[in-house]
Amino acid sequence: MRPIDAKTKVCAVFGHPVGHSLSPEMHNAAFAALKLPFVYVAHDVEPGSLSRAMEGGRAMGYRGLSITIPHKVAALECVDDVDETARSIGCINTVVNDDGRLHGTNSDGLGALDALRDAGADPEGSRTLVLGSGGAARAIAVTISRKAPPERISLLGIDEEELGLLASDIQQRGLSHVTSAPLTPETLRAELEVADILLHCSPVGMHPREDQSLVPPEWLHEGVTVFDAVYNPRRTKLIRDAENAGCKTILGLEMFLGQAFVQFELWTGEKAPRRVMREIVEEKL
Image 1 (cartoon, helix red, strand yellow):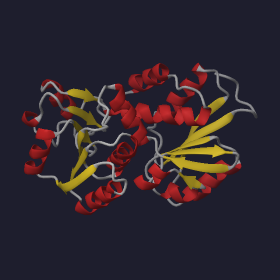
Image 2 (cartoon, rainbow, N blue to C red):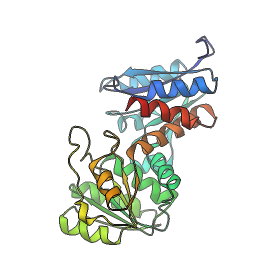
Image 3 (tube, rainbow, N blue to C red):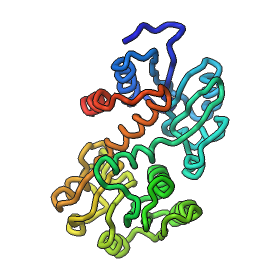
Image 4 (cartoon, rainbow, N blue to C red):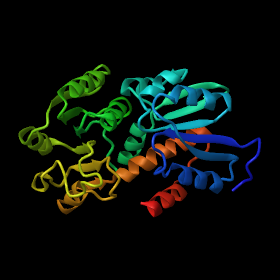
């Protein structure tokens, strides 16, 4: 690792809590691998203190920020400009400081899209089913509707108001046919029968609920690609069931890594050392 001095560029994660974050070790290993004069630190920023923390980062010349729970929505009002996709998503997780001007974007959806493409499951022109309507669902569904629009996006979830708003935001682009409905056994089974891609974006299956899945295993079939945004545990029940059914599967770890690759490249202008970053995360998980 290069010595830290007055020329070192600082990046940081702002969240509450942040003690569990894998980002500092991952990004610092990546900076070291490319011998870049960067360092990445973690700051626990309590709710209500974000705007002051952001102004502090601006004043001290921090090059980039990762914004995580619970600040992704509030951070929208703390930057100077936000790209169109992130504005439609309604939150940001990445900030780039260009000479004191803070630019906000959202790399979560881009990370998921890259993971799908890397697995040979480009959503463009597909029939895509999204389970959930919260932050992860919004980031992924809005991003793919803009960057690789499916022929059809079906949204299923338990919050009908959230579903309706998400459907409306996607429909404004007019590039995909969008439907939304309450998540029931009947709607889920019907949509799975015709889906090319299933994007699971709810917390079901996350630690400590590893034995749970929204999708009965007997409804999974060859020909559908199953992506699970949950990355702890690495292989969820949904993923294991999908593998047993002969589905192509994509782990949530790929989205986490994908969004980090995007952040690294925005901050440094260099290609992310993907192998180094992957090894750090896989070792810790």
